Image (cartoon, rainbow, N blue to C red; front, side, top):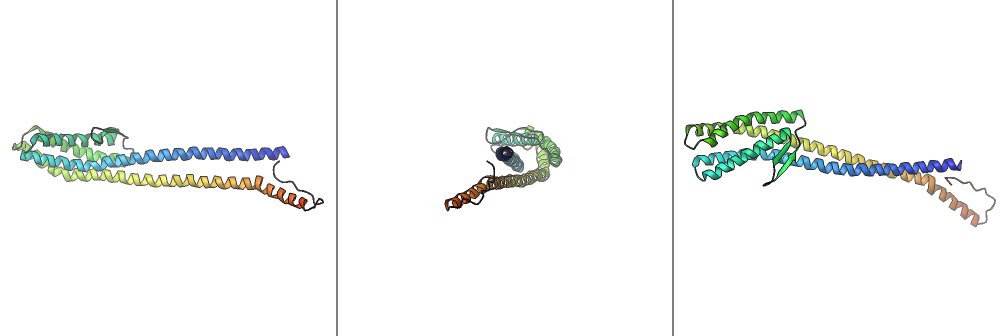
Length: 238
């Protein structure tokens, strides 16, 4: 009987230790996953929100070309903004490298949801048309009929391209908010598990260790008062 009780206690303690170790592993994994997810969401949102700004930058440089003041500087700025927009759009759609900070690139995962892919496809379609006019603009000189026509066509597409790019950014914002809520629920579940484990450990220690020790203390106090006739009931594991 004592051996069975002792084995039962050992199994309970081993179970609690295993549960504690598992909880630690889950907590560390959750923290690591949370940090990686938040960093990814922040990066994707930052890239998506930059796209409308690049459209504005392209048009500013294109309009400056028409004035022929610092033509080469504005032509370089237009080409850089267009390249950054196009490379970022491709990375968001298919995954890969995207320009980030000055002289730096970041690896971007491809859009996973059908909604994101659909919105990005709309941007691709409008951008292809916008890019064709942009190529004409960069290949001709201000004052030429083709230059003026291309510039006017680009201006007409700016609201549509901007609106579609903003819709992509809103999608990433909503996804980041949803992921944040999910991560909060996971963290709450891990915390609840920790509290439950502490409660289980407290109950086991009370039942198997502290309660029997209090009983033995009462017995020793009774014996110290000279009571040698009352039978001693031994409870708890050996």
